[in-house]
Length: 471
Image (cartoon, rainbow, N blue to C red; front, top):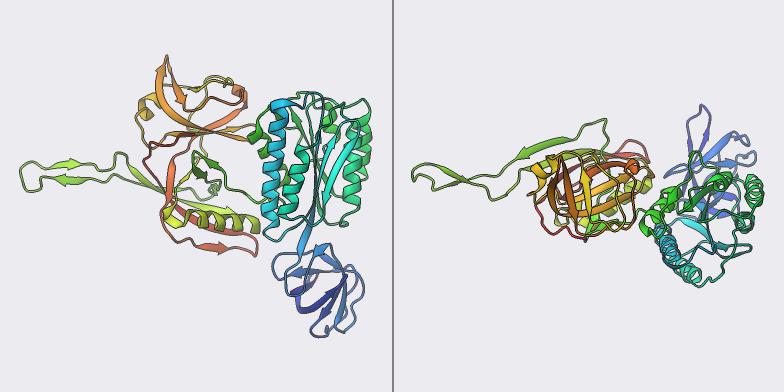
């Protein structure tokens, strides 16, 4: 392993590490000068470690350093992470609501397991709480550990009033027994009813003593977030409120809170195809080139006629995509691997406000009313624009496939293949985007690394004609 010693205003100095014992690094060659404690840091040859030198380094082959990373000689250090998810087992956490919540946690943990499989060291803790708390802990968790924890969660029977402090006491024990400062620590608190009086204040006081812990409170079908806001120390002003029984919305909310350091971006699929989640960098506008294939009919036999073998104008869109971290770069490579270049097909939300909703969405309904008659006039017979992506104010998305479009007064009513699983207020819909089936325009992708962790790439994408986008 190569490390770089850096001091402010000085050029970094490279050193080859032969062995690691505790927090002492044995180097392959003596250092050529003294390094002051606290004024220098160690950076890895891939990424930045941020480990501080804990003492004056003599000109020999031993270097004392303070770091919180899982390291092995010959490999790059991996920053430790600790995650605790606590779910309240209230009298209303039953039936479909409980099933959906457990499924959402399992989905989020599956993405955590995918991140673990990339080499990340993550300590995990699941907590079920009411007036008391039960927990299961796995240090340096593996995918098998994650599966065991999901099985444990499904066997928890307790129901009672919620005590936030009981949940935070279990979480504090978990974090205190794990790696020290500098570790990425996250706590997810799920609740569907208000806690016992005073337990929120006690939990908030306990949270203030928990070092470097990001606490995310998420309400399930609970509009009153006065208690949850006391135990949420994120910079976001509002508490996410997820509809009861909506597994997809809850799992998206959890994984978005955890971020890319803990969750691998698992492939999101709809109607049998992957949904591309990469978005263009709008500092460089997407270039679109349209064309419509035409062939001559009865050439040299009288009046020339044309045939159009493809019933829609093909458009190749070139987009510049920024990849802001090594995790995103890995996700992009995985995306290309899954598609196998131009062989695979995927769904691509346009990211634009293509349609504007004219009314709220009602649970059980199989239609969507959008403003104006343009959708009916221009897309009723389309074999390309047959699926929609709805982006909501809480950051979640909903996908829907189209079976027909009809005029409804001055507006257009879109008929969907499946009923809505939850109601959506008109004010909660940020935008409605078309989501055509696409294919890559090339088997090759060039990645330009701007720094050691930031890259850019250009994708060429072609929409396809399809009539089988049905959920």
